Each structure stands twice: as C-alpha cells, then as structure tokens.
Length: 140
Ligand SMILES: [Zn+2]
Ligand SMILES: [Zn+2]
Image 1: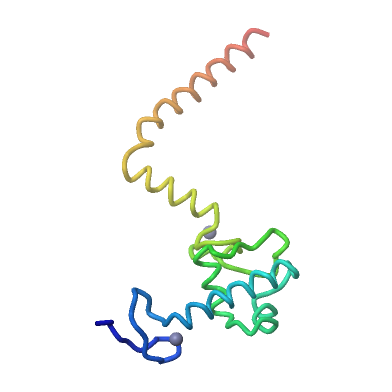
Image 2: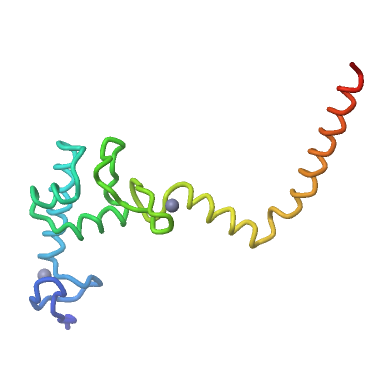
C-alpha cells in the first residue's frame, strides 16, 4: 500500500516516493527552474527581484536554485548577488567564495598537521638568502 502524505507545498494528498512534495509540484518546480534559467539566458544582467517579477518564481526559490548549484551566474550577472556565507563577498554559486574555500582548505590542512614540516625549511631558505645577499654586497 502506498505511503500517503500531504504535499508540503500544495497540501494535496500524494503517494510518498522519497520527496516532501507531490509529483505535480516536482514538475512545477522543474518548470520554474527552466523559466528562471531561460530568463537569465536572455537577460544575463538581471537581479533576483527582476527575475522573480518576470517569471513569477519566488525570489527565495531562485536563491535556493543558486545555492544548490543548479543555476550558475555568469560573470555578466554582477547584479545578481549571492553572498559568501563566511565573508559576504558576492559569489557566482554555492555557499563560499573562492578565497574562503581556499582558507577553509588551508585551515583543514593545518589541523591535520600537513603543513607543519614545511615551515622550518622556508625559514632556512630565507636565512640562506640573507647570507647570500650579505656576501654579494661585500664582494663589491
Ligand atoms: Zn504538491
Ligand atoms: Zn568568502
């Protein structure tokens, strides 16, 4: 027997198949996604508000499409701001800007001690360079 639930979007009773919304709403979301994508293709410089007004798709939903990385803002979409959750810088997709992604990666590496053995050797190199410069100036 089918697992009957109420769709969390339209409230209709539907046979549950692993999604919180009914198949009708799934289709509708696909439609909305396509509308937004088409609109952005035609008007790449649009803001979320403009896209929302033109397509009738909820702004929150457009942001969700972006967060889920289903939609990507092209470089011309400078008005369409998605903010890095860490530093607030405008980004094209996902949750963090490249900077914060790199930082996150670096701090993870440090945490696991992968960077530690590199530090002394870098210091030695700098000292060695100073010695060389000293010799070089003396030789004049
Ligand atoms: Zn529904
Ligand atoms: Zn950031």
